[in-house]
Image (cartoon, rainbow, N blue to C red):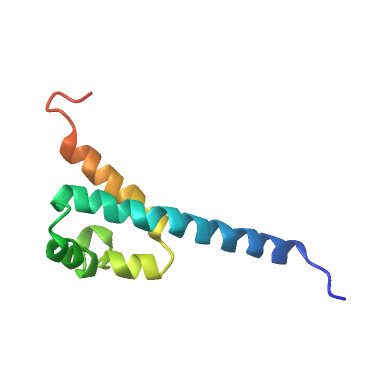
Length: 91
């Protein structure tokens, strides 16, 4: 019978955290981008997800999601939308 080491336990928890974050982040990113471009503009949304973005280290958002960096992408999208929608005088 094999025993679980601390490293194996941490790896298992990290894997589950990543899976949960991806399950939560990706639909939220798609919704936010869809709201920005207009929900019915699927072509523009698809183009955004597949185009390299210099603000993301010249990675396409799809590449970031595949690399397991959806949490970072979500934070970036939220920050960009917050900046765009911020009133002229600030908060």
